[in-house]
Amino acid sequence: SAVISQKPSRDICQRGTSLTIQCQVDSQVTMMFWYRQQPGQSLTLIATANQGSEATYESGFVIDKFPISRPNLTFSTLTVSNMSPEDSSIYLCSVDGDGYTDTQYFGPGTRLTVL
Amino acid sequence: QQPVQSPQAVILREGEDAVINCSSSKALYSVHWYRQKHGEAPIFLMILLKGGEQKGHDKISASFNEKKQQSSLYLTASQLSYSGTYFCGTERGTYKYIFGTGTRLKVLA
Image (cartoon, rainbow over the protein chains, first blue to last red):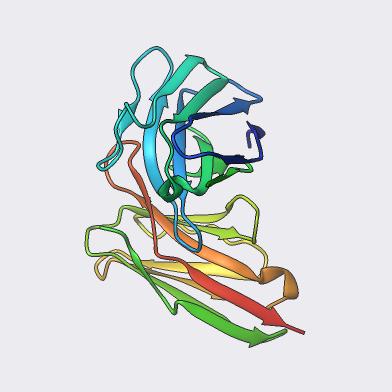
């Protein structure tokens, strides 16, 4: 399975500011995924990032609020823009385990608190 | 729509068995199970594919009823390390993953 790291691991931010979260994978992967996990809740897919094309966003998530970059096959960033306290969550990136099944392998997550 | 898991929470003693259910309102073609410990990332446990293939993990096994659109996770002789939140998950279209509501499990010594 891929080894995934995220930066920062946690942050406390002020309302109205933006934070960029980085996700690094130790091997080349086609698809990377970004999830949000609100306190005590399940995981919700924000968007899917394919290298060389624009990210695909799920219903309820828009590019202006969560711009994503995918410059190469091992790296992606998620920006949470113009933050409000409702954005306080854990943000996780993940990759497919292999090309056969839909197994997901997750990074350690970024715990974001917005004041 | 998100798969619904039951129970929402369960407490058991070391050595006891537990069953966690995952029910979907839409057809399931595969089901995967994850465990997440507090403050950590979800860890893949197993996947069940349409057609009955299932891959076990230690004393954790699972079943998949395609017709009923349900899956169940069986934890046998629970260990303290089994504590965490369990999520089922499935794919709703290409690269559109959706996770269940979650079941919090706590194993007491």
